[in-house]
Every structure is written in C-alpha cells, then in structure tokens.
Length: 470
Image (cartoon, rainbow, N blue to C red; front, side, top):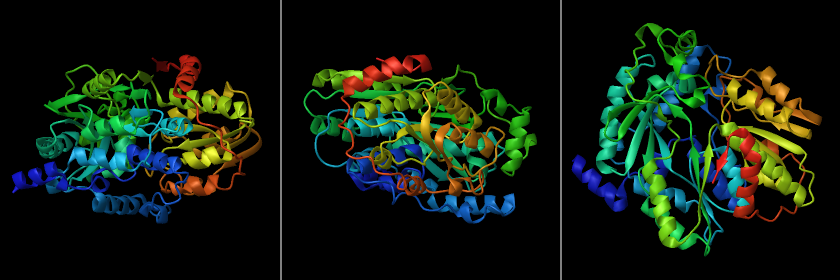
C-alpha cells in the first residue's frame, strides 16, 4: 500500500503543498507576502487568529492544551508523511507568483528582509527548503532521544519518496514550547535545484537577469541520525546558545517547566561531529545546482551570506532609506516588524523603512537597538512585536520593545493588540496589515531598484554588520 502511495505522489497526486508546508512557517509566509506585493496587494487575508489569543489570561496548562489540540489538527500523520511530494511543494511555491517575466530572482534561506528586498527589486523569492510538522502522539517535550526515534521513522517515510531532500529535525522547546512534545518539526532542504525552479528560471526571467542566492550562515551542533536525516536540539532562533540545552542548564530547566516538562528526563544524543549549518541553511548541492544552471544559461550568479538575521535587516533598512530619499521621499519613518508580522506592500505604499526582527528574543531586539542607536534618527517608529506564544528566559520584555519605539523623535508607537497578552498570546499576519494601513499614503511608489545597484549598496552598507555580498 505504501508503494502505491509513493507512485501516486511521484505522479503529482501526493499531498498538496498547502497541506505539507507548516502553517505559519517563515518560508510559507514570505512567499505569500511577496506574491501578493508583486500583484499590488497586501496581506489582509493572511493568518487566522490563533487559539491561544482567546486564552491569554488562562492558566498555563490550559493554554498549552489548547495550543496542542490546534497544532494536532494541522500536523501531518505518519501515513501522510509517506505522501509528501517535494516536487509538488516546489511547484506550489512557484505558482504563487504572478505571470510575466522578472528582472532577477532571489533563492535560498528565509528572512523577512529578503521579502522587502525582493519587492524593492520587483522579483520573486524561492525558498531552498520548507518546514513540516508531524504528529507525535506519545511525545514528551523533555525527551529529545524519543523525539529522535520518532522523527527517524517519519524521515524514512519522507526520504523514500523524496531522495532529493535532506530532512533536518529540530527539537526546541524554547521556541516551540509544549508543541515540541506533541509534534515533530522537520525542515526539508532540497539537495538540488527542483524541476519547478529550473522551469521558472528558464521561462520567467528576462534575458540576462541575474540570480541571487541568500544563505543563512549560522551553525548549530548537529547529530547525523542517518543518510539524509539529521537532528538538532535547540536552534539559533531560540535566542539561547547550544550550551543552554545541556541538562545542567538553568535556562533549560526554566524552558521545560514553562512547557510542562521536567529537566530530570533531558538526555540529548551525543554530538560527535563539528557544528553544521542550522535548519535554515542552504544545502551545498542546492547551491551547486543553481550555479550549474546559471553557468549553462549564461546568467550572473551572486551570493549574500548572512551571519546573523540582524545583518541583513540593518543593511536592507539602510538600502530602503537611500532608495526612498533618491525618489524624493523622507525615508524618516521606520517600522520594526517581527516574525510573521510583516507586509511588504503596505511598507512600500506608505514609504516606510522596514527593519525585521526574526522573533521576539532579547538578542534580536538588542541588535535592533544597536542599529537604531547608530543610525540617523527617525521621525516616527512603529513597532510590531510578535508574541511567540511561549515563555522563555531569552525573550525580550515589553519595556525593551517600548525602548525601541522610543527612538522616534515625534511618533513612538507600540502595537497594543500585539502587546496584549504578550508573550503567551498569538496574533495573525494580517495584524501587521491592519496597523500599516493606518499610515498615510506616500505615492507614487519608487521605481524598482536594479539588482546590481542593490547588491552594491548591500555590499557597502552590510560590511560593517558582517554581511558578505559576492
């Protein structure tokens, strides 16, 4: 029976990409937001209000139970894992972009600033991988070895029908809370350029249009579980360091208690290999596939290597400011976005400078503060802190977010809906649209930036942040 399902998936009859790619995952949100912006539309239809938004005043066990039930309804079953067709997922990403030809393309790691960069260039962004969430019915947030065993079985089903994937399993109670004990997070990374992407590059790019690969260069301790399947405990987006996931870590005990676990059971697998690229990195074979295609097609290929999310966020914000001013606009109004709370079209429509925080961790907010402190002052600063829905010692408090807004000379605004119930509630992506729609219009929008000009500006402005553009 399993063989029949794989054959159906290979023929394009597997699960739809909309069902496979995790709801709320960064790649999914970015493709949806960029596709809409390239059509001249905002993100008003993105995201439903999460279940915990109605229970932010409830005890932690109640909120955890609600979140787990909600996640279970969207997670893949073990049988469905065998029906995943990565080729169909790639086609689903491609199909979200409007028809026509483009002056370039971005590919690679997910990053909110890449969405703003893509819209400024008038080009699409295609991810080098996608996130999935699968059921773990007898799971426990404090048993990473059991998570590895369960994930290995799921990865085996996935890889049997998708040998062109590498599956990275991430067990991170700091970023996922109780969900890490009820579901398994799997990041599928292409080990080559998918056929749908090849067709898109060949048919939808203008003659001579360049190709740009964005690479998240962060590393993390990785356990190579099997060929094509690797496992990591924790992740860079948690705001913690690898040492914080050691059994003796005080931070880990805090995280596990808030997620309903017990630090006494925490026994991660031994890491015997040097740290590898983290879950949002780009597989070397994917990179090689893009390079080979560009060489055969006679296209220029460029790389943007990102050491930390803040490096690209700062460089892109500086680029937007110069771009807006060159078009006769002030470039003095800033919006600080966070996580899923972004809307590239409304940012462009209002003539705003966007700075994107990967999440609500103290580390991300610290870096935003440092960038603001070293920048020419902004007349207004609007802040959209995305509540992560979990508690963690690594999270920034509301006073720190208020300090970010305090950099505005005349307007200082922290979104109240996002702050209500922070950090344990949730808000949909469309909340960013609702807030940004209140900004005054600043039309017409500037003419798109040329790819070569944008890369030169990122190279000059990003060097001080460690950004490598080549």
